[in-house]
Image (cartoon, rainbow, N blue to C red):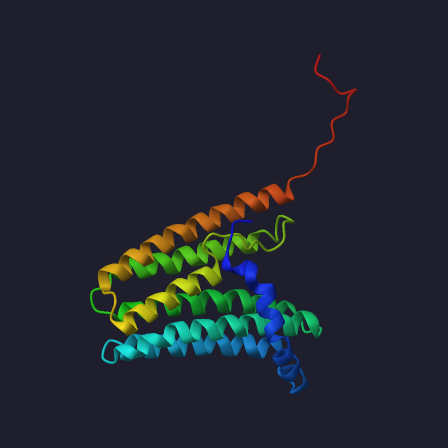
Length: 215
C-alpha cells in the first residue's frame, strides 16, 4: 500500500474510543453519524463559498471541519464495527456520503475570485474516481482498497491547508488552481494504484505441476 495519512487511522481511533463509548451509550447510531457528517459538510461548503470571499477568516472553517469530519468518519466506523451496527445501508451511506461531501468541500473553493472551475471540478471527479476504484476491490475479492498517495485523508489535509493559507492571506487564486490540479493528478494515480494493487491481491495463486510440461 502506498503511504497515506490513512495509515495513521489506528492511532486516531484509539484517541476517539472513549467518546465512541459515550455516543453508543447515548443511543447514537453509526448511520446517524455518517448522515450528519455528510449534511454538515454540504452546509460548511455552502457557507464558505458564499461568505469567505467577503470574510476571509471563514476560510479557516475548512481545516477545522476537515479535522472534525475525519473524526466523525472514524467514529461511525468504530460504532459500526465494535457495537454490531454494520449494515448494508450503512455501507451505501458511507461511500456515497463521502463522495458527495468531498465534492462539496472542494467546490467551495470556487467562491474565491479567480479560481478556475476546471481545477476544482477536476479534483471532485478525480476523487470520486479514486474512491470508486477502491470500492471495486470488494468486487474482485481484494477488499476495500485504501492505497495512496492521495486518499481521502490526504485530500482533506490538502484542502485544509489551502483554507488555512487563504485565511492567513498567504496565497491567491493562482496557487489554489495549481494545488487543485496537482491533487487531482495524484488522485487519479491513487485510483490506478488501487486497481493495480487490487488485481495483485485478488490474483489466483498458480501451482506449478512438474508433470505438466510443454512438449
